[in-house]
Amino acid sequence: MKNFKPLFGIGIAIIFIVIGFKLIAKGDQLSVIIGYANIIFWSGIILFATYKILIKRKNY
Image 1 (cartoon, rainbow, N blue to C red):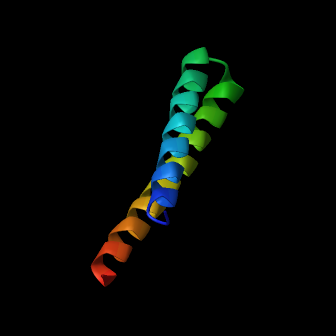
Image 2: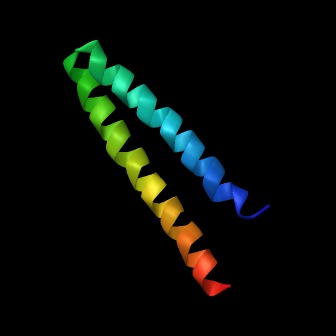
Image 3: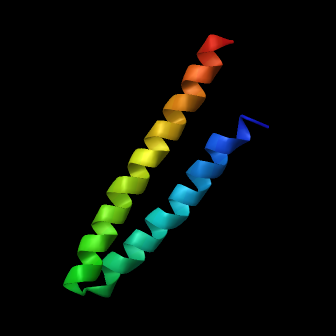
């Protein structure tokens, strides 16, 4: 069950990245800034979760 927590986090992050792309497509300046910040933040979360998955596999 512990192995699914990072995968669940990756799934949620991908949803928020899609929302970020939708905000960028709006064209409003504030929406574009929030969209880029959203994509950068959640991409970092995906990288962190992937790193945790890879490190756990090496330890076993």
